[in-house]
Image 1 (cartoon, rainbow, N blue to C red):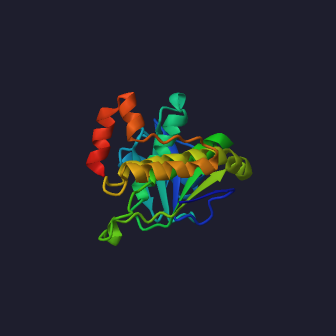
Image 2 (image 1 turned 180 degrees about the vertical axis):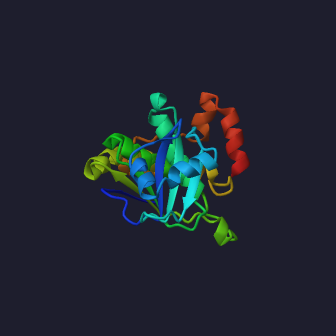
Image 3 (image 1 turned 90 degrees about the vertical axis):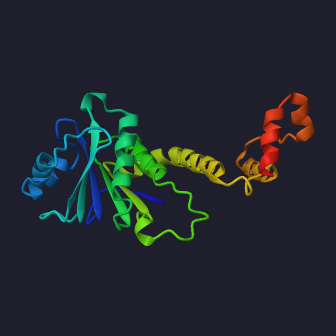
Length: 230
């Protein structure tokens, strides 16, 4: 997944705007609502969208703006808005358009701090994780189309700098998810040890215990599981 931080949304395919409970538009939301002659407000009313957590509302082909689609993503109560609420809203935005055919999702974070803008990208990246290594018959309409996450930030450079540490965390999470998703006949004990040992190049200290060491330590159940996957 390509992640980038930009100063303006431009002609975004999909532009996601956070909305707090009570239909409170954030960031560029009020400007977009004005530019579209109140289309956002009207759509929220017609769709009974209130800005609750994990709720989304899509407004396709809005007149008066460059964006092809405006996506409203609920952020919950403004007074309780925190990193978890932000991550939930960014993740929900991705899931709402992942099969839309759009190649990029742009998230409006102009009202957020650099750290929060970075976290929005982090959440969308984790939401986009898919283990498709062995999928050969997935139909195009069932294949996620989003290939890039663009975050519009007040200070793109600061947001990008803040994202560096989160990117490392995301890579680690994706690695762990890959290990969990691999079938047992592929990720047997020796292969598992091999993949983990590869992390030593990052400075991680890895110790691999053999059957005798594990038996001595009393890990008989673990050994039984390992034998069943070999």
